[in-house]
Image 1: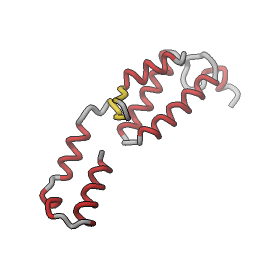
Image 2: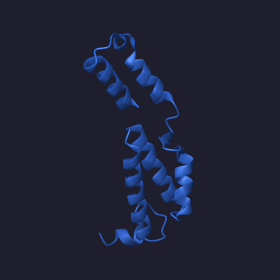
Image 3: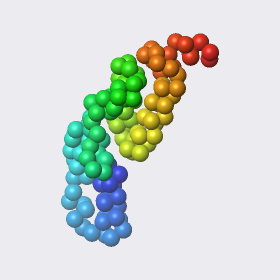
Image 4: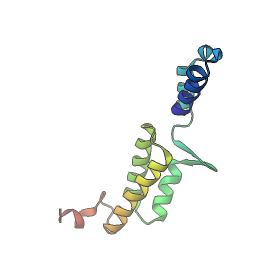
Length: 117
């Protein structure tokens, strides 16, 4: 949302030279949007919450610990304002790595695979 507001400010203020842009509290708008449901990520057709992300990871048979790790990964990416598609790509890649490493629920790779590195 920060980028959208910045684009509006630049387009209407710097490019089109419209005076109303000077009257807007841009920092306040950014703060308001950042306070809105930080645990959710807006996507086309709705929002995806962290609980839903973790539940989906469990359905993929990642186990409780790994599903929690996926939730933590997504939470951190949202705090850092990663784009949804970036979040989706990273999450899917991490989940595939976890699934390929075996059924252990002992962290990212599991004890069996860690010994080989």
